[in-house]
Amino acid sequence: MNTIFLLMARYESPAVPLDKVCADYLNLTTKKAQEMASLNRLPFPTFRMNDSQKAPRLVHISDLADYIDKQRAAATSTWSRSQPKGNAA
Figure 1: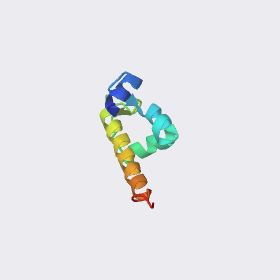
Figure 2 (figure 1 turned 135 degrees about the horizontal axis):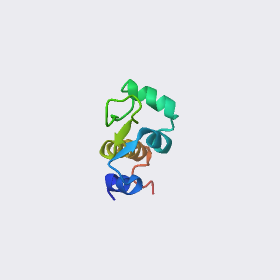
Figure 3 (figure 1 turned 90 degrees about the vertical axis):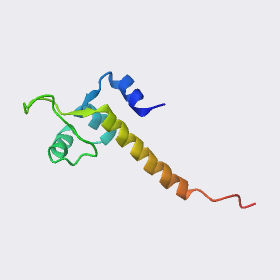
Figure 4 (figure 1 turned 120 degrees about the vertical axis):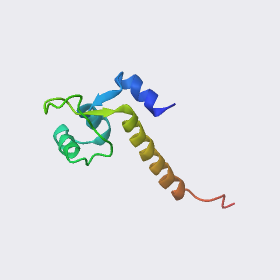
């Protein structure tokens, strides 16, 4: 399955509030995620739909999907390197 399609099915929107993303994927409190977003320290960009400071920060699902896929690729690579080579028989 394609990660972006699965995220679209889950969130039913092309942009997801940062508080949902941090709870589901980042293991960060909303406050910490907001602080990191303000400093551009999250592993993906965030945006607001208008200039109001009260507007929620959003994450585009394509950016979230890219992050998930990169994390999976890194984990798969690490796992593959730790597996025994060949059969010792």
